Length: 382
Image (cartoon, rainbow, N blue to C red; front, side, top):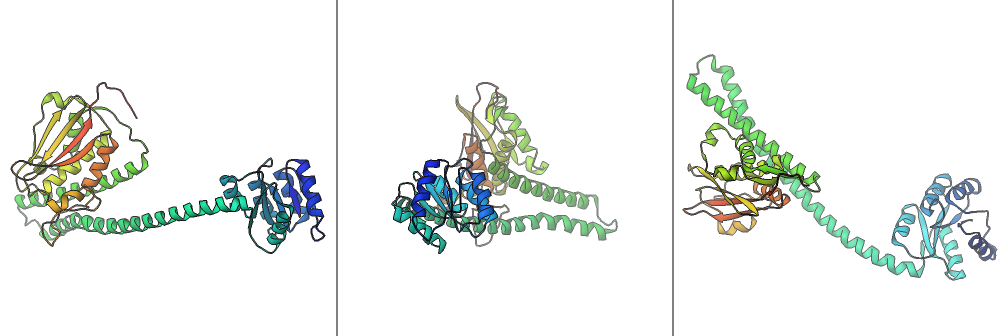
């Protein structure tokens, strides 16, 4: 066997201890990782007893020995239990882990056991390793459950996304087919109607892609970078995503002093949150205009987006902001959308340090309130 330890006295003591067993032959010794690997390459020992803390590292030595002498069994030797060292040595291929000061018989038994392929841990290590194993198994079960849920969500997202993409694509394809066979028979009014349909479909596609992009941005950003931005700038960017017919159905009445007031916001994502909430209101507006109002306080500015639709059923209010939740009024799915709009809008607002809430709208319908932190000075923060 090979013995490697940075302390010559320890090497001598181990050599004397193990040399007392007639079945054990010390073929090489070393004081650092490099020397240990070189010795193993030459001697090809059955067992390498490696100090975890030697210069270069016990893990490095173990990996190197496994490369130059694959049949060598690695037994780690440490002055004390250290979770990181145990994990590193096990990953490096160690079959045993002993604490310095273990009884001579225990060390010799571990050496013989390793030759037979048996794993050996010092009693001091075993209890703590079992505790770590228990915690690791519990965490593994949690991760497994989360993975199953993520896989379900991914499958559902793909299915819903395919459905939502199919609708505007069908409109565009149908228009192209109609134009291909029209041979000039369409009136100007018909042409304008077809063009309007294609424009609406294209805008829907653009918003779907932008919503998915916003999800990716939120996942990538550990901390959302915001800056002082006029509220009017956020609204203008958002309203620009709606077609002229939709813009006519959005009644925006916000005082000039609030339009120029600055909020802490991420320009793109803040606008995206407003688009998501407004798009939801347009889907349920019941031919009445969607109303956009604002209320300002010293600490925040609240944007209120209200529709005059049927409102949110009492049994669905608690989960309206959950992923893939869509308000259903019949057994059929009557409204477009991925079911991620309000969920995503809430996440964006919370990432801003703000919030999104649902309130009843006087006269029927629903009001969604987006609250942005108010900026007291135009300086950037992250």
